[in-house]
Length: 315
Image (cartoon, rainbow, N blue to C red):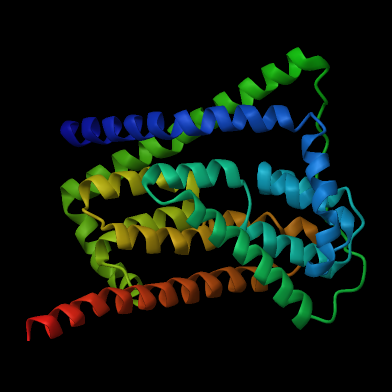
């Protein structure tokens, strides 16, 4: 038992250190940018494109803030605007696929996936889903009625307070990461040593096979689905080291998770916006499953072509 605790703690600490070196500087930078005109300038820049997604120009503000910061910041920005139910739902769909881009994409890249793939999938899904919802849904023209949400936050006074607040946020981000990842790694180590992980992997086998992956990706998928991409990356890094997860399976797992991660939290936090959250969850899950199965099938066919060519050449 003592050995399991030691190994789990060591793995958790190493993972926290690896991801913390990404999360701390990016959180620090974005937290400072939040109090500069940069994000507002970006919102003004993309405002003319909003009509393509069925959104008004001012909807660019929560879209930019949500992508640079996180879902909570994006939702806070939505609450400050008077939008229709349809606009709020489209924003919710877009932000579900594409939020906290800098941190989550950098963490995913740390695991080994190419940054451009992550960004292409997340931004592409956000754009395509918004266009489809806008074309298919002809209702929701009434003004959105927001639930009770406390969105008050004291503004820092001067650059010193801004920088101190940014350091505090960045530090708390790493501490939160450690509080999640280290106990998780210890629990997984105990499950491995007790042989329970093999049982869980076999139970998840039908799901992973359906998505075109091997059984050993099960912990990666569950971690990402439940605790999110940034925190779940800790499990993914360990899985690559210890479970011999292939580059192909890791890529497919990440494609699934960038489309659909932290499904419970990321769905429930949209309830105060007064929109139907069940369709939001169904859209995320359906898109993630279809996209992963499709890419997996294309990948298998592409890998089979050289094999057939080699067999023909030998004959």
